[in-house]
Image 1 (tube, rainbow, N blue to C red):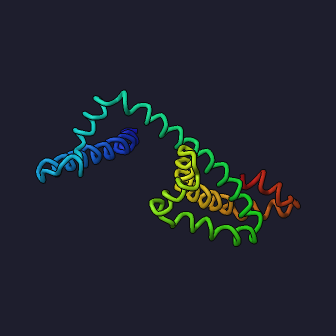
Image 2 (cartoon, one colour; image 1 turned 60 degrees about the horizontal axis):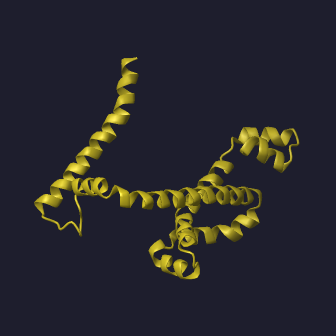
Image 3 (spheres, rainbow, N blue to C red; image 1 turned 30 degrees about the vertical axis):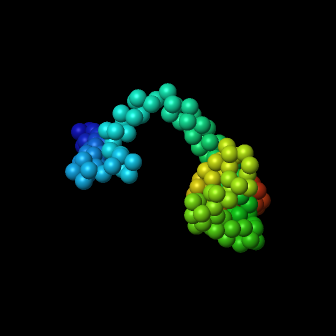
Length: 173
């Protein structure tokens, strides 16, 4: 049992130590190299500013969290629906997946100004930008998960003459 406790605590302690060490190195580099705060603020200055300007920053935090949550929700729903379509029709996957890849590899900083110009309402433009970041990982991992079903179970469903939709509903999902 003692070995399990050591393994469990090392999963928490090791990343925490690395995080503290990284923050210390960051602060040290900023001080030794005398890097101006407008170029690279140190972690202590960031923490101090976070505390002193909390009343200004908190409303922005709420907006950011709302946009992030909405983008994740939209990405999850659209990613799941499109992944189901991709796994049910090879033609649809071949037709649409290249465009999903193009969306993923296009740098957001290159198209964000265009999105802001095209989508007149800024919160919606920000939602679209956040959606672009989150959509492809959801789509590709859901497709991977839906196609990683145990072959023996797929054969069993075929043996029992399950329809494609029954296999999707009861086996893959």
